[in-house]
Amino acid sequence: MNRHDVYLLQQIRGYPCVTITLPTHRTSPANKQDPIRLRNLVKQAADRLLAEFGKREIDPLLARLERLAESVDYRNVLDGLVLFVNQDFGRALHIPFYVKERVVVDETFFTRDLVFALNRTPRYWTLALSEKPTRLYEGIREDLIEIQEEGFPMTHEGPGGAQSLPGGAGVRKGAYRDEYHRQFFRKIDAALKPFMADDPLPLVVVGVDRFLAFFNEVTNHKKAILTTITGSHDKTPPHELGKLVWPLVKANLDSHRQQVLAELDKAISERKFASAVEEVWRMANHGRGKTLLVEEDFHFPARLDETGQHLIPAEDVTAPDVIDDVVDDVIETVLSKQGEVVFVDNGQLEVHRRIALILRY
Image 1 (cartoon, rainbow, N blue to C red):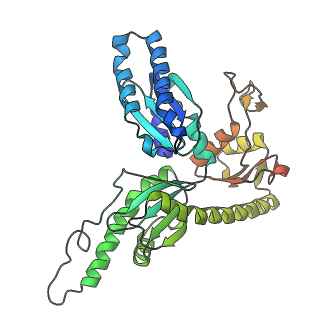
Image 2: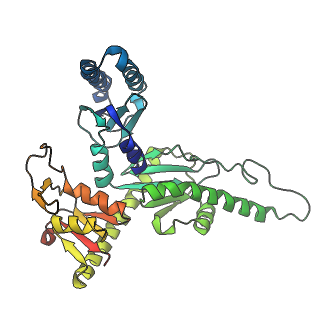
């Protein structure tokens, strides 16, 4: 699950869109109840739809929902499961974070839990370089989820890979091999581009020295590379690779966090900052946010005043005119305008009332 996935889901409209969310369990015996609970939620969704629509009218959607639920592989679940179904679309997502058990029937799919996780969970890309094949993973803490689209996984099919190198007297096979590898890694870098554009996360690159050198030579994503891991991991299972990658990612993110806090001090001295949620919200919506810093557990439900220019704190997050969490809205706004978001420990931004924004100007 990445921002591109969520963006596509958010574009789908038309009543009824059914969303089912369910916490799942990776180990026995807790996971024995997961299929039963999902069946109960599917029945709950069906009962709601049949109360509004005729059976013949809604039967294709119900059939799609049943097939999707039956296709769930409970041997490979993570911490949550989300099903999205309407008359023309069906998709299940396994997600490595907890979600509440619920059924939502609306004009659009319920993506709030996914957006929350995208904003609040440490995430990164891992690119495992290899001739057969190079794999791309989305990392969420120790969990690596393989991407199987846009050309990934990608195998070196050309000369020096699946094909033999040109032969003959005077042919420098080493030079040919190197050039074909450069071409292969250029293809990988091009395939990586839409993922980095839609979801510009830190990038971890894994591979033997030779492949790391070729990729570093041709990539347009050098600034995104957080760290590298040297070694052949062609046959390393994702859960084992995740255990190797995550400690390095965490250490580098911690170091980056300290750098950003130092940048905030500099921005304060230059008066290029905003503090407190309302001022940060206003500056972010004006496109002035370069880097947003926010304490990990800071949430702020609010409503807009009559002018639409000021936030009024709200206690009842279920009220129709209340923004569930202004902080999430600010995060999305800053990211949509090519800004950066950095989470810090609770208490580190106390003087700024838990949120601060480094301004572009």
